[in-house]
Structures are given as structure tokens and as C-alpha cells.
Image 1 (cartoon, one colour):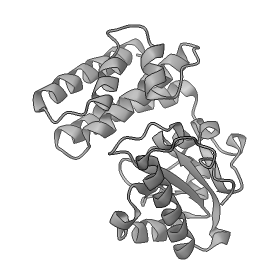
Image 2 (cartoon, one colour; image 1 turned 90 degrees about the horizontal axis):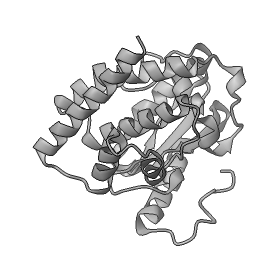
Image 3 (cartoon, rainbow, N blue to C red; image 1 turned 135 degrees about the horizontal axis):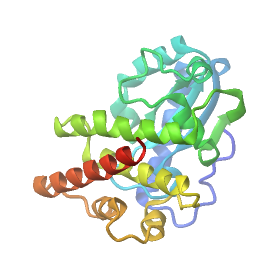
Image 4 (cartoon, rainbow, N blue to C red; image 1 turned 180 degrees about the vertical axis):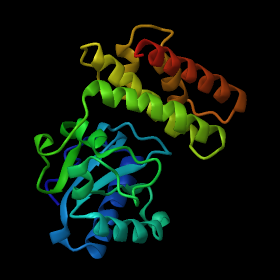
Length: 244
């Protein structure tokens, strides 16, 4: 691995120490199952990077592999070893996907297009291999990415959540990213942390504040969750109307 960016972290929590051990275990697993010449790069992203993990957080590890066949093989062996890898999650993307900006049929229904990963490339941490260059791959405009995110959340993720197939914490995370990109579209430079974005958005009626509350105070109360989901739907509908 390249320099482990977490080496200089001060006052690591028990959760972080466990996550670091899991990350190293996942990297050993990756190298044991995919030859290094087929791994272009490995990035880490998400709340592990921003040091905002909670007990349900994953360590999102994104291996960039040479082609779809390598990705399929990795996904297959990963799926058989999920429990051993936890809380790390290997989320491979192939060069073929990046070059076409299309997910392969092995990608999974909830996997965003490759340019979603590229959009925030400078915020992900490279821990192995040669870093990617955004300019080498096709990308949608910021506006098209934003509209796609709104539609995907409204038409797929929320219905899946109502069927019990998409977790409440996952939905909160999606609301965070939509809120963050909403602020970017306004020409602002919002923080990429839960605490920072919650403080940055001054409108007390904004959905981010309820999302942050449930992030910090997890609840299994069905009624409270339903109210939040309804508010999220209205928030998304508002943007969809404005963008027509």
C-alpha cells in the first residue's frame, strides 16, 4: 500500500482501530484473489476518510480493476466472504465501465454510474497503485449528475426502503450527498462532513438537519422514520419541479 493516510491520526477511537484492521485484512484478501497486475488503483472513500464513522458504517474500498471479468471474479469471491471482511466493503469498478461510463451487468442494481465516483475523485484517498485522471474518462455535467441522483433516490431507493430492501441509515447518507451537491450547485463550498454540512446550511427547515439528527440519534421508531421519508419525498419533488 501507499502511505497509510490514517497513520498520523490522533486519538483513534476503538471503532477506527477496528476499521483499520478490517481495511488491512480486506487489502490482503484483495491481493490474494486478484493478481496485482490487474489492479490499477485502490481508493478509500466515505465516513472512514472523514472520521465520522458510526457503529453501522462501512469502510468503502474501491479497487479499480482492469476489466469486467476481473470485477466479476472479485465480486463473486467477495460475496462469499462478506462477514469476514466487515466492516470493510470491496466495491470494485472496472476500467471498461469507466471508459464507457456504463455499469456492466455484474455491477448491481444500486451501483451508481462510474462518473459518480469520478465526480468526487479528489476527495477519495488513494492507497494503492496509479491514481486516475478525470479527464481520461467521459463524465456527465454536474447538473445531469444531480438530476440523475434525484430521480434514482425518488424512483428506486425510497421504494426499496419502503419494502425493507434499503436501510434507513443508507437513505440518510443519500440525503446527505444530495444536500451537499445542492449547495455546490448554488456556487457554495460546503464541508464534506455531516457535522460541517449541518452547521453550514442555515435554513432550519432544510432536510439535512433531520437527517443529521437521525444520524446522531439512530431510531427504530417506525412512525418517526416514515415522517422523515415523507419529508424527503417532498424535498426531492420540490427540486424535480424546479428542474423541469
